[in-house]
Image 1: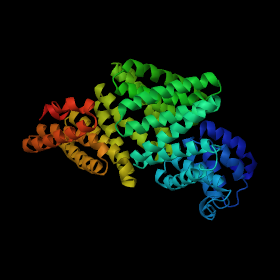
Image 2 (image 1 turned 180 degrees about the vertical axis):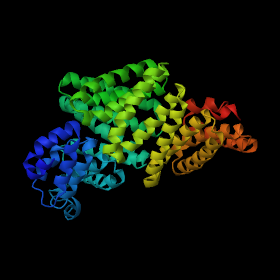
Image 3 (image 1 turned 45 degrees about the vertical axis):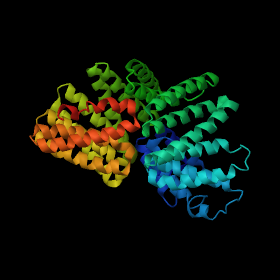
Image 4 (image 1 turned 60 degrees about the vertical axis):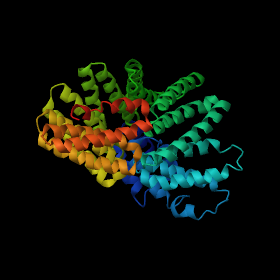
Length: 467
């Protein structure tokens, strides 16, 4: 790494290694680029860093910060007058800056430039005669992702729909170029739909995304297979949630197989998607009764996510914490309850840190991890501590539901666990009060998703066993 500092012209081979493996070359490049007297050509380096390569986010952000002093970002962007011929370049720079921030998990910081970039594209749309449509579609899709991660889910869904409409038009005219982009846009739309409770439509859109990705590969054999694998992960999750374990299992197996091959050549880029595929595959295996294989897949997913979180905690620590909750469940089912409690506690510790920094974004995750810890503590006989944790989870769930009515299901789940813990510890009166609140919440949910929740009103779970 010292050689790189002495010979900055070696940045290209160093970046090639970092793209494939991250490792020490990544840190050396960040240090080198961060120097005020760095001889590395930032105009050449910036576009060479792939978007979406989350492990390279520290390098991308360092480059962005340095370029902000000399390019159309930061203060220089503000000086460009509306209507100037440089507006398209301005929008591109804003979008690039926002994408780098988002790749690093800094979604709140990414929102401002993403919004401004979209506003410029909307103004230009009146006169560009479609020439800038691909860039506008990409800007809308990116802003939708950013807003989803800052809690603006309704607006995110509207923007995702608009982006898909633009990509449909583009794919109809130039399928070899834009079918793959349409598939990615449909993937993102399926997430936005699921986030607002439209699970049935999300599954339909995810299925369409797979069909589009397969068509893209037929039309252009060079179409990236990683995008289709990522789409298969989402589809497998939706199918599993819909009760179609066979279809979900097939999609998950295909995704894992594809991503293993891709990750062999480029572990830094495809490793995060492989971890996601393994997490979904573990769920499919568990649902089919193959607990040993589910546990093995979950352990592998956790190992990958630990590595990724060490490189980029802002982006990967939430997914690590989520997977730890899942792993704790499999460990408990396998009879290893002592380790299950330890793993569940680790998940809670991670989410406490995350929620302190960004409560609006991470409180739901903290609640879910607390619920998981309640279950594990109860299984090992720590009932008083389980009750204390369950009470904390409900208190936080109320905060979540108050700020986001779409998250009422979080409160319903936590109340169910609290009812059971209160009943087990002879707090009968409090258990009845919590049970009534749980039923009231599920009535509200039944108005939003009647097929999913109306049947549960007669037998709300897990509260039903104690009400």
